[in-house]
Image (cartoon, rainbow, N blue to C red):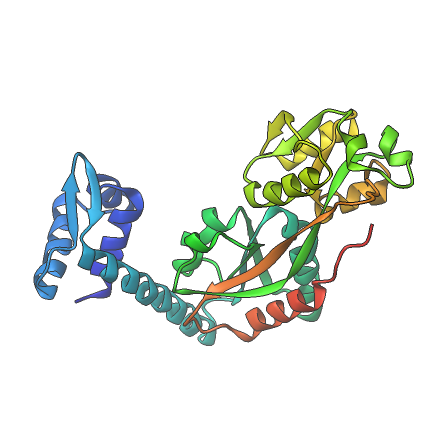
Length: 302
């Protein structure tokens, strides 16, 4: 069994076809098929099944794939480490960051690391836990900082650490009628239109429960979006309300364009998680970045 055969297997599954994988790897489909066939022959079992144009793993193939991801990831890490020792590669830190943590927690950790190690290369990729998980498994990312994922989406190859909680608030423009009230009741918010974010199901369950306890229906979206920039711009120019992590509007609050409503009852929290490959070798720079994240995980103040 050769490392390249495992890489070929993973590429087929990631691209969804022999044709796309062959193009990405710079091989012919025949050469790629032969590579996978040789791997199956060496293991004495079929790893991939093809049906209705869809490629999927056999039961054994799923286990081999899981182990292959770890092996390929560690191989890439070893290559980087050797290149670093020989001066062929300047080691840095590669971080995946969710939208809310990127704007403050990860940014501050990166600034601090750069001040302590001038010239260090820090690469930050934006997205969600789900969109960046493959990059973490493949070794393209050292760390992933995000909202804690659904337990069903966790992977046994990934270790997770709870960093703390982020506060979510009802945000509005600074001159909004409710922004001028010392203490806002949830009932007061029902008089205004709502802008709600997609992909916040867990948070909205908590919001729904809080409104229900007050005898109110949960907020109904007049506008729905996945764009943070759109949400901030819409809030600043209208009387819309939106539930957002405080860190996403911290700079707007400082600039005097947005404000968190001071609720009599409300404000919600979501757990922030640090994820990394369980058996990976983390460099001193990566460990320092993690330490900066831990130190910087302080609750926001409104």
